Image 1 (tube, rainbow over the protein chains, first blue to last red):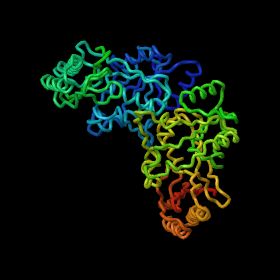
Image 2 (cartoon, each protein chain N blue to C red):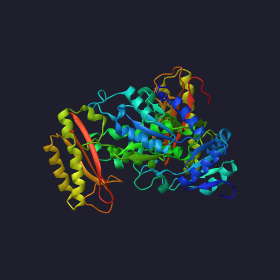
Image 3 (cartoon, chains in turn orange, blue):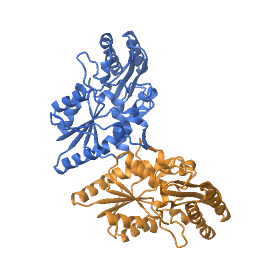
Image 4 (tube, chains in turn red, green):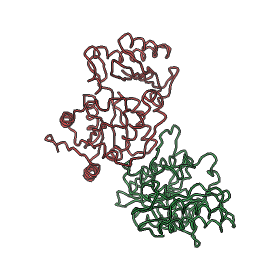
Length: 290
Length: 290
């Protein structure tokens, strides 16, 4: 129990006992899965959770299985005490912060492998990623058995993979997606923005500008390949290095599309600025608002 | 609703509604997953379920994803009306019989991949098998959310994979294993015994005799490799064709063992009699009873 009244729980057994008591008292439960390093985007997820349920759990777990050996597991920002204070101020109730050995005890040997919405995009450059995310989120869901799990649209492909997994595995909860929270200039909030130098921070908004341009151009009738190619050029001109992808996909299935139809679309991009990898996405096509 | 009072349910939505009503009335729920073609072994699982819970669900679903293209999916025995009558006579409450399209709707794209206890044995000859079993059983568990799921020790490696999955994915239920039910001569009951000719049926008991001999010999100090080799020879002498494996494993982890220690062991075998593949297993080592 922290000073602010937020419970900090480290074992599945204690977590289940608390949630069971909440359920007996008639409370609804919402879960906000995070890796900590909370910013205003995470807190907007907590606010959405509080609108839907009378008890809100935030999980804080930097999940080793979604990082490859050459990624930033060790340097990923960890600000646990600040995170607890922020979550408490937002009105949250419980922080679920298991140790890696509580999450993956010796002998752990069951993986979830998502395909469909997990194909391509992030998977092309991070083939380990969604297997790790799906497995840990399935565990978070079955540990807490919430009514809702709240995810940000910032990680749009992840949100799609979560919806697919919950549907395919009949997990008894609803996945809720929340709009990306942006800085004043439009840059999507991300824990990894902390890696950016001052100059990189100024250049970073170009990823948002580029995908917004793609969305506007294809709505006006431009060719999808041509608009994506222009976005790549704009990113390079702004100082981005490797561009992992600029892509237009069906907003629901995440299947590749070659033309604008009556279905909602999503423009997604991932690119490197110095040593920092940024991702972002916006809606496009019918009914989209940016 | 059948004449005998057993409810037959075809959609997850209806299933959940019924189970939720049971829960509101304070009932416990046990699940017996089957592929139908019920024999006395299945009914012993239903009896165990009735001892533990006031409401018992039997799922009957011939799961296409655990059969490979050259296996017996189309010819697998289907005796649904008889199954309903038998389950009703045993005192069961609900038969969960989804269609393949209810279980795997269009766009289904999430698999569970078990390793650990799934490594070797059946996986060496049926590499698709436990992925299919784990995925469908995870779905059966999350669809019904039972307190207990009851499996026979006849499929011992499957039982181990289920225990591993429930532990690894924090599924909120307990896996219960029940002793294999045998014919008068010792042959393990199996839906696939229906494939055997009269002569094959007489020869089939040799698989039980052979693994029981291995268990007795290694308890008396015989070498594990030597005892397994003798069992293979006995199976060949009895008329078995291809022998997929005769193996001695740790009873809990299913890891290979090279000597008898103070840990419980399991002797497992799979072999072909004509066109029928039979599997069986018995306990060995400390505290085992056969």
